[in-house]
Image (tube, rainbow, N blue to C red; front, side, top):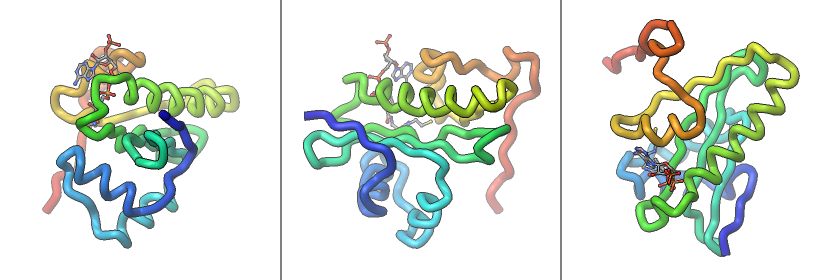
Amino acid sequence: MINVKENINNVKEFNYLYDSVGWGHYDEKISKKAMENTLYSVSIYDDNNIIGYGRIIGDAICFLYIHDVMVIPKYQSKKIGTIIMNKLLEQIEEIRKENPNLKVYLGASKNREGFYEKFGFVNRTDANLGHGMILKNK
Ligand SMILES: CC(C)(COP(=O)(O)OP(=O)(O)OC[C@H]1O[C@@H](n2cnc3c(N)ncnc32)[C@H](O)[C@@H]1OP(=O)(O)O)[C@@H](O)C(=O)NCCC(=O)NCCS
């Protein structure tokens, strides 16, 4: 049975998901800190097995960033990503009540843009803004 849960049980599940989608996981200490500093997250379980996750980071009022939306390959294309996004967007709408000018960002992986477009995200240039930028790793 599919269960939707706020937060995530532990670092191992988070790292397992990272490995499953081919991103390679962080050191446990880093993942733990990332989770502790997350504003809101949602996990999806099939019975007790983690199969998906997504989180929101940011200042909780002006700028939010959706990150780490991931569904393990066996469960992809079964609307699990949709459940994750809808839960994150519900939370975002709660914050928007406090600040209608809230800005919500995400950085789509290559070829994942179409997924996020389903939920109302557009390229920054289509919103009359500059490109998103990222500091290059040294
Ligand atoms: C991207 C991801 C989260 C989507 O989750 P999912 O459970 O497979 O997606 P869903 O089944 O909920 O799909 C919802 C809709 O998005 C569409 N969609 C899914 N992936 C897509 C893609 N890469 N490009 C375009 N559309 C996509 C589906 O066709 C579906 O459309 P429909 O509602 O018209 O039928 C999942 O494939 C994944 O975890 N991929 C690996 C990790 C990753 O790249 N995450 C994104 C990081 S930015």
